[in-house]
Length: 356
Ligand SMILES: [Mn+2]
Image 1 (cartoon, rainbow, N blue to C red):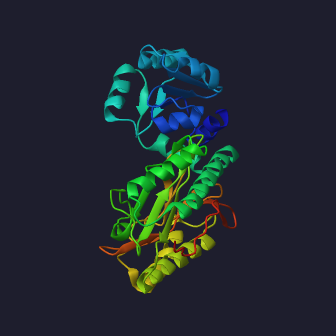
Image 2 (image 1 turned 135 degrees about the vertical axis):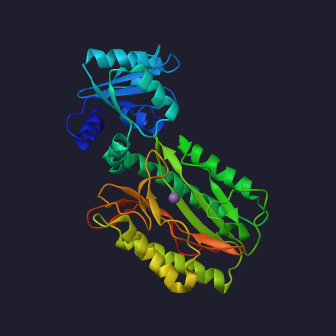
Image 3 (image 1 turned 60 degrees about the horizontal axis):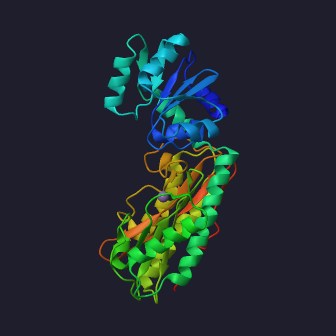
């Protein structure tokens, strides 16, 4: 992906010579090719190399367009030779590479100055945060499958069904409707367990009077989407209704507010003020949202601490929640596309309280 390497070089300090990419997600970003945990990418100005072992070589040669594909023998010796061939004296590597890998790189490249600080990783994350048309299109397709799954679950959810069976139903539905992968392990929890923001589905059966929280997303062509809906089964109490409507009001207000130019913390505050103002301070412990892309959680964040400026082209979740320990919780989440003057909610699933 030549454009992506050019954007990266433009985001780094002047005098760029070379960058070594060894993490799965960044390899995927620069090659648009999934080689699992294998392979090494070496980016030079105007030239990218992909060193990959025999398991992937045939498919890589057929599919990787923007890098020269080289059969891996001893990857770091091959990197050393390429750097020597191009006269490279300075090399960036990711600070998310392991310490063991960094020490192997340093040992293998004695004459090269190696920068393993946060510089390269920060530059890559900044470039990745603003999505291209193709990336956004993949997220939109992932969201369409996710929406269809929610609609399907509205007719599936009934008292007596176990959480783990419902979660499996969702995963089978998404894969059966075009998701190459799931964005993450599906959360389907019910009753008192909904007070756990990341509760894990278990043997519990859905009962009348339960809230059910579903947090899920498809992954299409390597890109994730992320959605949460809470629905009621049978009947709701006044307290359940009040909590639901507070979360919904916070979610709608933050979506209406968000646009390019705000700091992440400013968007978080819009939802947080509504929730705290309704008396639920202490019951909304996580941030309002996060960027989504190749990874389910990317930077920047909508959180109390995030000072980063939100830019047009970023894909951000908006997911306030209220969690009352031992009782129930509610979270409502959409994935959104940030534009200059507003943000677009990518999904089409309804958010009004649904009682099944
Ligand atoms: Mn999320």
